[in-house]
Length: 172
Image 1 (spheres, one colour):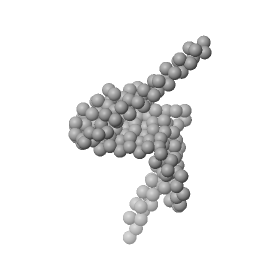
Image 2 (cartoon, rainbow, N blue to C red):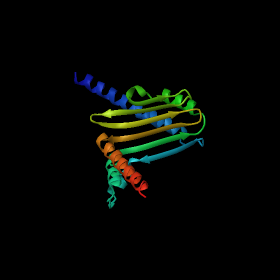
Image 3 (spheres, one colour):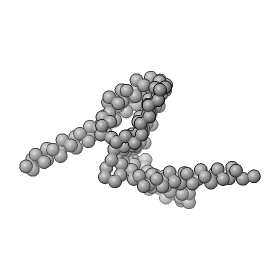
Image 4 (cartoon, rainbow, N blue to C red):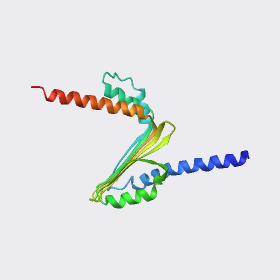
């Protein structure tokens, strides 16, 4: 019985790794393709930012630091041609069934947006954004331990700052 449990656990771990591997393979396929703008930020960069002794008197800066402290990486691919082709290809390469859709948009102008999340208990382990239109393709993958409460605090900090700027602009 222990052997069956062990093999089942190994099978599940392989499946979990395969999804991340699918995004990595798709990213690697185009990393040297000149048609793409490619951005990769590793977990080491976030570790370095977290170890810096920054004087954060700004609520936004503190909120950003709280959100990024558990990120393991960000991958971004952008193509400004053949967007629908790359979008469809990404959907075939990445098993989106492992994600929960947070937002889906499909317009009559052939513009598609999928904002997907992969959960890990109360937090998210990945946020995945796929955008495809005739002119543009975008893939953005945030991985790590993403705490939605901290993301909410970041959003609130920016909303409050925006309201303050708006009030300043309306003063005579």
